[in-house]
View 1 (cartoon, one colour):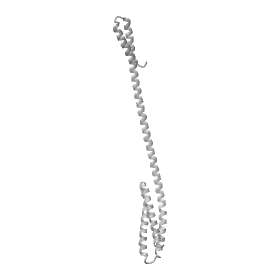
View 2 (spheres, rainbow, N blue to C red):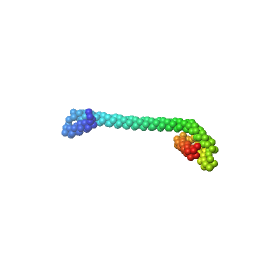
View 3 (cartoon, helix red, strand yellow):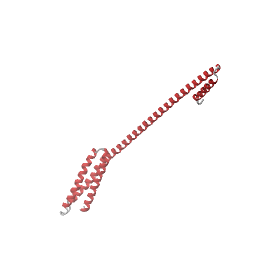
Length: 190
């Protein structure tokens, strides 16, 4: 039966109207009580069905909320894991850069030192008229070289977050030193 409450009410109304027309029929009284009992049972069944539906709806909402919470927690865990992986990869890359910088810097400085030592020996053979200018220009080269040596020694203490910039700056200054040596060599024909 699809509409137990409505059917019961219709039956009850039919009985009530029938009861008004036939007041003397005792058999109708028993039938009316039977219909009333059926109507009451139908109302109880409808109320029980409504309660069951409400409980099922509440359970479905609770399950959906739990599933949403679980999905959010899972997404948060995945995001944390990805962030941790990215941090580790960045740290590993910077650690490798620092190791490379600490290995390369002394070799690059040694090459520059060899060039500077060779220039110093050649300055001795310059004419007296060009020696003062050459010595002044060479003094700048030596000052830049000393600064680069000091900075290279400090590379091991540089925080990894600023290492890339520090290393790039240092290599830029070394390139500048090499350009100065080349220009000096050309200028004084050494």
